[in-house]
Image 1 (cartoon, rainbow, N blue to C red):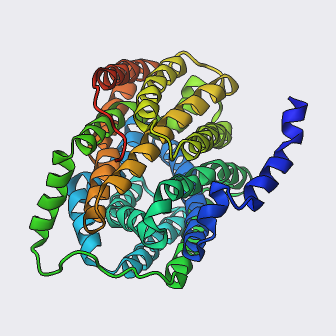
Image 2 (cartoon, rainbow, N blue to C red):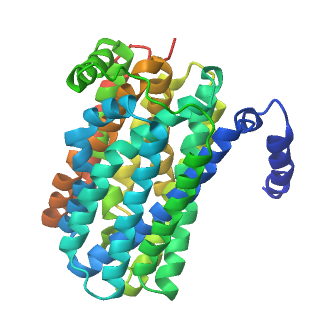
Image 3 (cartoon, rainbow, N blue to C red):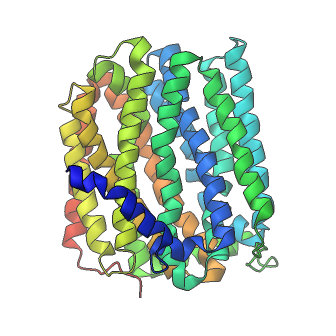
Length: 424
């Protein structure tokens, strides 16, 4: 073990300097570096706010149903408008959309920071902010994903996608740790303030990118026709259809636990109210560590025909992780389980994201990616509130076990399908 850790600096130097390494291969593109750094700093702020928001809601209400409702309100706009957003992205200048979405999200964070600091905050304010942020995210997520294909040549896209996902999940490690520090030394309004400031990083990156981010779709075509075209392409391609259905079913059953982390920390791990923020920071960081491990796996296998197998194994592992978590009563015992959940969740969605981007033609990419986002954060998000309500009525362990059983059924269905999910 000591030898393994002693070799880490050497391996890191090789990763950064070896001209044949995938890291060097994608980071030699200036625009990709700008997008990566800007997104990473922005995501750190977002994770700081996510942790602070969960703690604030649970302090205000003590309700698992309200925790689920805030997450549901942030996701339901994607359910309603997700397909429209992808078509809109294809018709508009991506640079302008990226900048304005960051400005609006920053203003929302600053507003909640002020209300919390001035002690005027009510849970209704958080509901409104969640819905507003969800509407903006309908456009921000697909435009950020579609921008990637403009700053990286297609031959390196399969390598760049895992590294782009690395920003979000590396931030999942640093963000909750920073949030725990802020909640220990300051008040929750500082979490929102940090997030508001962090959006400036992606604004500056978007303005500095030199690549052509102009509209790709035909502006003269009715937007409904463009939506139908994107949906039809996804549904007619057997691989994309399978991926869409798999993501939707898994998201519905297997992700509600993320919204319940403050309740899990206090009720299942028996942490006091003063320790809840630290507990949420620990468990969220554990999921983030798993996410980074997942990105190492998907990056290592990015050019190998194993994506379908990775997805099927990961859905099975997620079901097992939810089942084990339901019996856990100690925060440190939960850490390896949450790492397993982080590995499985991110492997599923990062691999599906990669396949959606690679399979889709350039002129349809925004719309096809929006179908991936719709499955993940739109249709699948409808499961957040029912499972939160179930946790409120029947306790969290029961809800986790129900989710585990349903996720295992999804895994069984995936294993029975012989369809290859590889890009050709």
